[in-house]
Length: 454
Image (cartoon, rainbow, N blue to C red):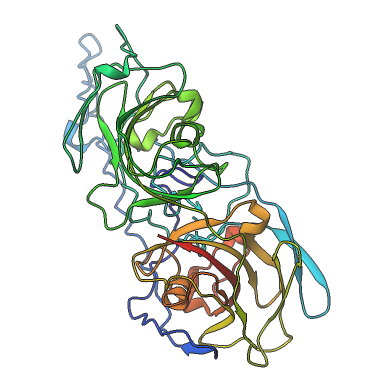
């Protein structure tokens, strides 16, 4: 919700992951699991509406008879003109080594729209980020491919499509003290609509006792979002399976979220008002009923803030022969993948390259990772968080990323680097991810550094 993506916020037409995926416990040796290839179901097409003929006019020339209008019930519904909000990061070239030469390709982000996060992070948002914490889209950007799925992350609510607000009318309130918040768990928020502010403003409702949140940290929150113009709730993470996690200062988040949470102590409940200029701007978020002039009001519980690793750290593991090889930049840890000139494996391969010593990744947690994804057949990189400029966060083990990620990363330790070789059935299925250059027959190669878990 706080990242570049669609307003759910990561929608796509890719098929859902296979339902028979079974996670294997990782070992130092490459582990292999098999899956049936998912079959996407074609959408149903409704019959064209029947058109009622206009009755012929009476033939008497002196007294023309008005033609009878078609029956109202038979008039076809007006098409939905709401537009899906594109929230996708700018692609950048990434160096990729094929067996004999280096190649470059547009960078994309992991999502099960393609895998990870054509999908955040962000920021489900976000894939993992909440739907409405994502910055407005760059309409000119090349579509991205991410390991997250077509559906929004567990933390992000999917709003009912609604007409976007035209902005505040009548007397406007701008005093944060006029907003009433009650409840100790999921809060009840009453906003005196229309409410609007000219700059991002915050009020600490309950002061936490933890350290102040700083840029670069992975923060976990719960929130309720209300449209200041009409006082209606447009999104909440309360009651969802997972809270929302993202990196503070991520350029893909809406500006007001980064600004409003910086310096807030962990454990705090904070009231945050974000004007359109620091939120969705002139694009708004029509699918959520958010117009180009609407102030966003959030009540946020800051649950944790951690400093993620910069790169994988631990004990190196010798990979099995025949797999892609990985060379690391000595200064940054950025990987370069070299794919062998051989037939790709037909089953999922999970090969640890570095074994970390941190917490074990469990199903339902949010992981913060650096990753690079390449296509086996060409060796071309289609997405890389290293090139995107920041790690990404995703809910893991819950169907929010492609099946190969859920299976291969649950059970690994923070600090680990894992090589994943993912056949189509555990990736984007027979549909592929055409915008990222991924065909339905393509096997994918990922190198993933697990930096943090929450």
